[in-house]
Every structure is written in C-alpha cells, then in structure tokens.
Image: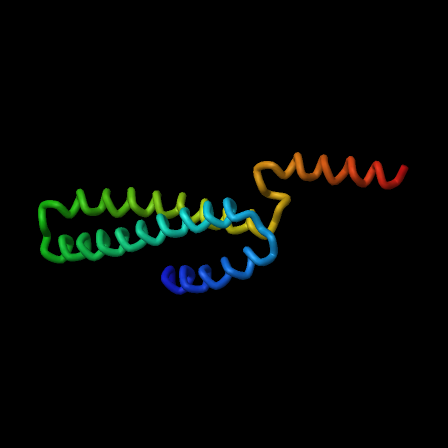
Length: 114
C-alpha cells in the first residue's frame, strides 16, 4: 500500500508543480514520505523476525517486541507528518505561515473596499 502511495505521489507532484505550488512544500512532503516508507519496511521486517522468534521461543523475543513497538511509534509520528505536510500542499490555511497569508489577504480586501 505504501508503495502505491509513492507511485501515485510522483504523478501528483508533477500536477501540483504546474499549479504553482511551492517546490519546497512539495519536497518536504516527499522527504517525509520517503522516510516513512523506509520505516514501514523496517517495521515489516522486525515484525516478521519477532514472529519467528516467538514461534521458536527464542531468548530475544522480548527485545524484538520492544523494537517493533518503538518502530511502530516512529511510524505513527511519521504518518502524521506525511499527512500534515500533504494537507499543507492543498490547504494553505494550515501552513505554518497561514496567519501571515490571511493578514495579507485581509489588508488587501480592506484596501479594495475603501
């Protein structure tokens, strides 16, 4: 599923760049997504190893469980960052500098009314 998101994201990147959306915002989202997919792959590998250790009643089963838990927490944090940065591409009101943008738009509207 993550790989499908990466593939469709590449196509979407070309479209939004043509719409005049800042390359830095797109790049930030892409970087988060690339890190996220690597963590998901690692989580899959650690989970399979943990399952194997559990079946074999290996002494490292507990350690594997903690590694899976830690990797899961990191993946949740990264998924939030990927989702938020993706939302910032389309929804300018949630960007970090949104208040400046809104103030600029409001002052422009006020000038037009006068």
